[in-house]
Length: 584
Image (cartoon, rainbow, N blue to C red):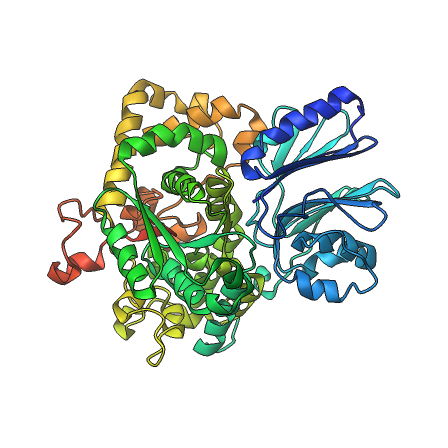
């Protein structure tokens, strides 16, 4: 992931202002260590920190059209850039970068070209002919983006909050799937899929259609000119991503440059059963597997850096981000610059534990819609920033626009969890890849219920965080929490501890407003809490809260077959962070 920073329409075009923009841009250098660029046109500045994935030799930014009247700084990947170039036969391209099409598409189609882009992106485009500009962010918000306003009338755009929080009077998250135009001064939603209205779809489930749609989503993300790999936790989502990648890598341009041997990566505490599961999948797929270990103390020592880079005080996000942050550093040290990850599946297919309580298909579908719309504040934010902190890019095929359209058009009745019919979480995804002749995964992995838990990277990690917070936050501090933090008041010592660190880095009121809050149980939205009256008295982001059972008395190595059936039915479900399984 690259880093972009733009200051548009400021009242100062002096050398001092240019120096300040460069200084702020360097705060994003971790996102793009390969090249730094800055273009100034009057009172507008476009800066870029590049992570070179496609065309490393000539794709430095900012990018221009033929006469340099249109300037663009982009963070992202445009997977259909070769197809788009064919539509721009009268244009001459300066680079082989996938993002080079944006300036030329604007010349041909004006502001309406954004929906033609198939990929993940955040960009600022300046038209120097009339000094107008547009800003846009990808459909789901896989890339991070913020917008701010200065007292002098300037508009600021940055990939991360730290690029603008000290210089803007007000700032906020740039909404996913939207475009901001200087000509109107308002946001316009360019991403308008059928599912966005939350109307109940009725397309019958076809496993082969779903399978092919996801295969296509993975294959298009093999576009790279640098070494890459897959994050593999041993759970369903990351295992499917790894399986498809391994199956189709040999026939790609990437394999010609870097070979067809796939590398996989996993992190966990020593002897974690999650590491064992990932190892099993890697052996089945024949990947070159890299296993990284960390201790609870390693994670605790990294918390401040994690909060600075992730830019949130949300408890679940910080818990899950920390091992991913540590793993990303190790991956980058091996010379890898891009990884394919499995975020988004649980939101699309209702894989979280609390979906067992969905009262009907309408509520089930509405909750999946709400979860997808909020992804940019949680899993996308974690995956983007935990990796980019070390100059690593994460690609997420489950959040492919075309795949989401297919998956969200299926009658939600097919997604409902029905244990009496043998339909466990994400059954339609598992069934789609159940191929007897050419299996993608072994049956026991494909149908492994995500109700297993990791005492290693699960309870030990989270309980270690809680114990550490208890040493730094007193009962007296908690009694005054609502006075110190009236917005999103922390209700636990762990939340209070994270909030203190966050406010030290980002003390502005605008900053604290970028983090969502509200009632939740087991990662649900506030609306879904209404599904079970018992949850209202047990609000907690942890999966343990959903069923009220804590299995600390059971050894993590105890096989499921040796556990009582009642216990198995109540095992808390994991949040699968690809490459690391985290107990929610």
